[in-house]
Amino acid sequence: MAGKAEKKPKEKAAKKPAEKAKAGHEKPQAKAKEKGKKAKIGKDPWKVLKYPHLAEKSMNMVEFDNKLTFVVRRGATKEEIKEAMENLFDVKVLKVQVVITPQGVKKVYAKLSPEHSASEIASRLGMV
Image (cartoon, rainbow, N blue to C red; front, top):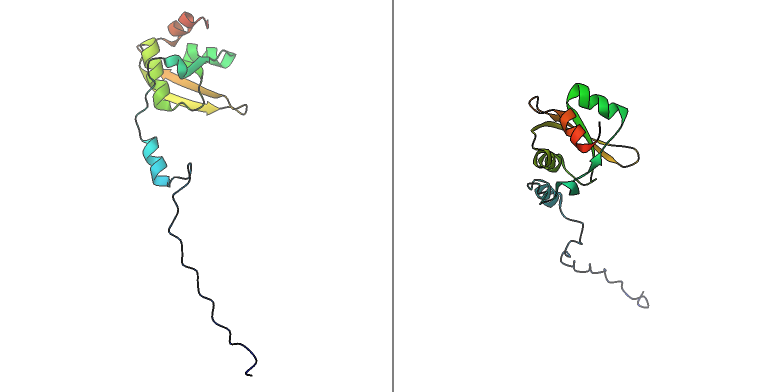
């Protein structure tokens, strides 16, 4: 068997050092830190709140539940929405509920404290 060449075992290629993470592929911990930041709305609360939602259900909520309904920017957080409403209307917001409709519209139901009237604010906005 002198005519056959001996096979050498293949050498494993040296592993390359890990490349830098591409943009948008951060670790989950990095994203969690970003979410924990304090929300800032800046000077204009109308950048968060788009317009009041006018529907029969919304009007009933104003009269009976002391709630205001708004369509808001899709990326707005509950904290930003609460801060915008408190700064814009000089009221205390107790609770903010968010609903994203099948059409992709983000609606907010904001419950006001009993000492503030949602119907008064709705009349100022021309809803009633």
